[in-house]
Image 1 (tube, helix red, strand yellow):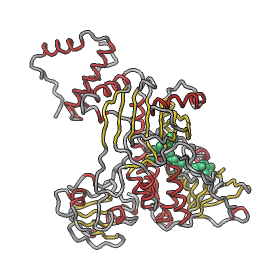
Image 2 (image 1 turned 45 degrees about the vertical axis):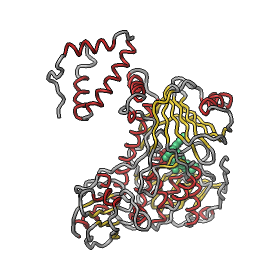
Image 3 (image 1 turned 135 degrees about the vertical axis):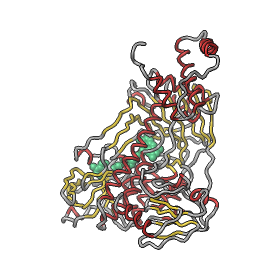
Image 4 (image 1 turned 180 degrees about the vertical axis):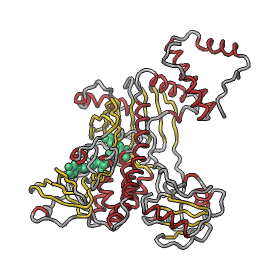
Length: 67
Length: 513
Ligand SMILES: Cc1cc2nc3c(=O)[nH]c(=O)nc-3n(C[C@H](O)[C@H](O)[C@H](O)COP(=O)(O)OP(=O)(O)OC[C@H]3O[C@@H](n4cnc5c(N)ncnc54)[C@H](O)[C@@H]3O)c2cc1C
């Protein structure tokens, strides 16, 4: 099964808002830690090695360059 | 009780007075690996001579954890049962982060194996048992014989040796370098030793403690008593406990080793001061290996060929698998067999060493992450592991050593993956004894639920198909035939086959493919 790259979250704006709300009140270091945990939680949910590799590659793409 | 070191007797070798006839095999180093190598070769009918610069078994804190596969190998060498009887096992492992227990696990032994998943036993006992066994087999063990030079020729090598009575020389068709992590032979041949040095120091202490202390393994990440570092407590026989304390790179080993610094730390680990220091040392750890383990007439086995950080206990265990992979092949070569067998040793054990190196460096990284993202994710895993199951397997405080599965290209069939070609044939109880015992050290054709084809040069084994054999070797199939190498590695398997196919797979074994 390939990584889903088409829109897949019904309420994208709602999710985005909840993501920011989850970080509310945290220092930058705490936010980084939360994000790291979130990556692990979601990665476990996905499980599939191929999808995870594609996700890692997609996330890495363009990293190290200015946005 | 602290171990009682009894020196082995030195006898002046005959080579001091007159040149000795050329030896078939000389082993340099009587550590666990050199001794095991000598016994394994004797099992295959070849008497090797063993040289060691010292005259006692391993001194200080070294290997304690021996894996199931090592115990099976030691069993074939005649010291497995002794090691298990003397050794101790822990079942409960506790992982702590900042003094809070993150989780614990109970290792339930898998039934139907002669040997347990591992035992803890000090290296000096394993060496003592092997040296006794070697002596029983009339193996020529030469203590206080230090190799000072090696010279390679087309069909033999010449060793220069220093003894208390002066120097002499030995020539041998084959030299096996089991001379440890600092291998002088490696240096004498000018070989590179590539890899990685971890910029971490660990203080390793063995303490004697009469107090009743649970038979558990405890691993602390960043304990409050030792901020930012890690600590490990392990039980050994004779009321001896092993403590590993990560120190950090900037510390001064000489200062850290002083009792006035060590004792207060250990008090915090064990929670009282009722113990005696047996041994304290400071180590740095490396992960390195030779690019090739076979250099003309000199073969490298054990730590001389590869060193790993001890987390995951792969040094000694990996070395015993080298012994297992080399013994039958070298014995065949000595008898005129195909030299490609040694290339197969090289290929397979480089593969095994890489797997051990990978596992050891992963554990070391998890325990001592670099600042930044490594620490970020390490801490994220620890945080989650206290709350959910999924993160627990990610917590890496050392993985139990398991034998690698060699990448063989061989006949395979739709049968259980645990017994696929390249894997060690899994043990199972038989009517009298165990499958590993019945496999012994020959090439075996194991036929389950079917009559085996007639092939010369294999020993046939046709046990009744028990539930365990069915689960480990047949799965959903009603029958199968397995060809198993002298090192008990599955060479090929079929659901049904004929003499020609078995003969072809047998030729692959003896021609080093
Ligand atoms: C703290 C610590 C913990 C460890 N824990 C574990 C563990 O739990 N499990 C595990 O499997 N492994 C463990 N290891 C690794 C294990 O100790 C080694 O892998 C093992 O000792 C390797 O055995 P060897 O025979 O290859 O080398 P060594 O044991 O080093 O033996 C080499 C021998 O060669 C001799 N020698 C050297 N030079 C010469 C010469 N010029 N002439 C003649 N003889 C010579 C030496 O005297 C020595 O006897 C640990 C290591 C350390 C340091």
